[in-house]
Structures are given as structure tokens and as C-alpha cells.
Amino acid sequence: MAKNKSTSLGLHSDTLTTKDEKLRLLRQALIAGEQSGWVDNFDAEKFKTRMRAKTVS
Image 1 (cartoon, rainbow, N blue to C red):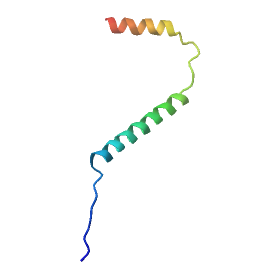
Image 2: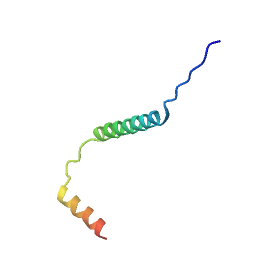
Image 3: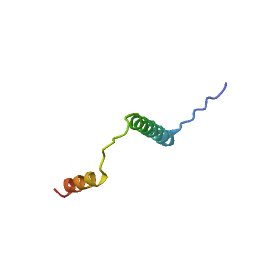
């Protein structure tokens, strides 16, 4: 009679799946950002000032 042998990938497989999913989501976000276009009148200094004011409040 032949013996069956099973192999479990265990936690390592779960970790790889999580990493794969994170990479897939990151790629999707990067593509969406690239396709969203450019902002012509963006003022980085005004933006930073607004963000700093929000974190202080």
C-alpha cells in the first residue's frame, strides 16, 4: 500500500501571499496616480504650510 505524504507551506506561504497582495495594491495605486495627470498650479510651500498648520492644531 502506498503512503500519502502531504506538505504544508504554513506561515511562510501566508506571508508571501500578504506581500504579493500588498505589491499588487501598490502597483494599482501607482498606476492610478500616473493616470491622474499633473497639477499645473501646485505650490509646494503653501501645501507644506497648510499641512503643518493641521498637525499643530
